[in-house]
Length: 224
Ligand SMILES: *Cc1c(COP(=O)(O)O)cnc(C)c1O
Image (cartoon, rainbow, N blue to C red; front, side):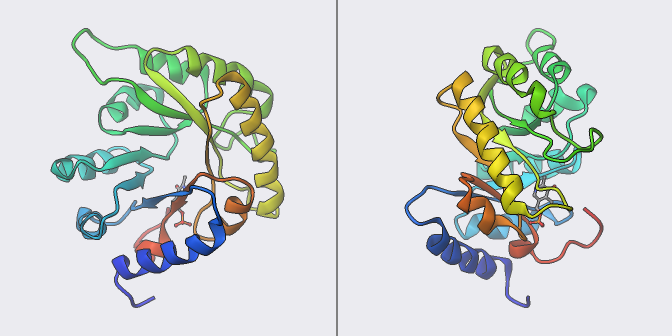
């Protein structure tokens, strides 16, 4: 991968055009561990949606690039005590996974205006309760809580495919969970699924929002 990120973005969108067929699919470019300059480069190429998974790295980039009016997606685990800070700069919260987190997002001092944030309920598709996301048995209650929250607008679901399962079968399960959430709120139609390695399967199973890092940005310097 020696091309510039903007060229990789263009190539990615071209392939997506073939895979998505008639459906609308949005691409969130995940820029964690990359400098704000890379975001600026992709924004100059016309891209608007960017994802980050860690506070305060996410905050620093969103603040540095505030004048560009980009849409920031927060993808990482949201700590309750940091949640309100994240909601100040993140337009879309992909990782709502507990009732307590919704409580935390609703709290705040008078004058602490953030507006209503788009929210996705993250679902744990693994058997390991320690992984991010709500257990499927608790999904309906959480979706109802988000739908009723004055701080959030329920948009749909988010998940990461497990490492030890074929992604297609995991995304098929996600599609049935998404259907349940649409019964709670018919307008909650987003399915955030699919990363660099598994996005084609995600699109085939109804993903509306892909979260693409390395395939567009190149390798990250450290971890993540
Ligand atoms: C890093 C990350 C991605 C992007 O992963 P790539 O494999 O680099 O495409 C997507 N979703 C989440 C939640 C992430 O943390």
